[in-house]
Length: 211
Ligand SMILES: O=C(O)c1ccccc1N[C@@H]1O[C@H](COP(=O)(O)O)[C@@H](O)[C@H]1O
Image 1 (cartoon, helix red, strand yellow):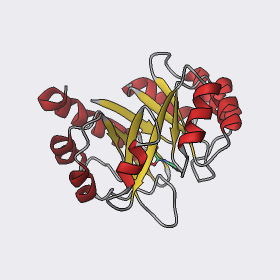
Image 2 (image 1 turned 120 degrees about the horizontal axis):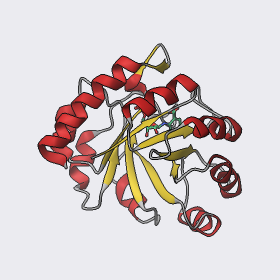
Image 3 (image 1 turned 60 degrees about the vertical axis):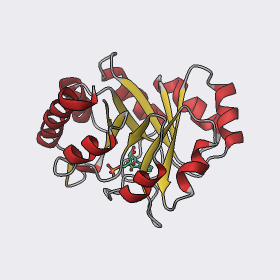
């Protein structure tokens, strides 16, 4: 099972990533408290272990701006967390033929996942829905809707995952990967102890069932 830690924005956060080595780290380019500029992401990316893949999180950003950030910071994956369309994704593929494209689904109702499956992304990332925020909410996704969707393609699971709930959730859903942001923070900043704790749980779970 792949592990992504999101919302990296300080050199200390990069040091924690290099120590615990998730598969992916995410830089948030949307206008939230975790936002970094492409230049800042590039500076942090230079400190990151070369074996960790870099994800850029964007919300309804024009494809040309996304392409600029990807090239500047050397990102491997684009995570689209807004209401992006199939045409937007097609345009991104033309601009960034090498990048993986993930579509985040803020799971609101039974139509959310089927709609996203038709957009042509490489992978879906299932997150919680909120009227006021577009991601990084710390709120658990609607697991009943995810259960009912019975997805047959690999997906990332996100939304309020933390050391208290992640074990049973990954056991039930066997996601391709998990994405955690709020659950490894204390007082709005990444917390080394929480990262260590969650890595311990995920390594144990991977050894057990998820592979
Ligand atoms: O983290 C953010 O601030 C953010 C802002 C806008 C869009 C997405 C964002 N993060 C993504 O949100 C999910 C869930 O995060 P959490 O664990 O519930 O805090 C995750 O995929 C982040 O990449």
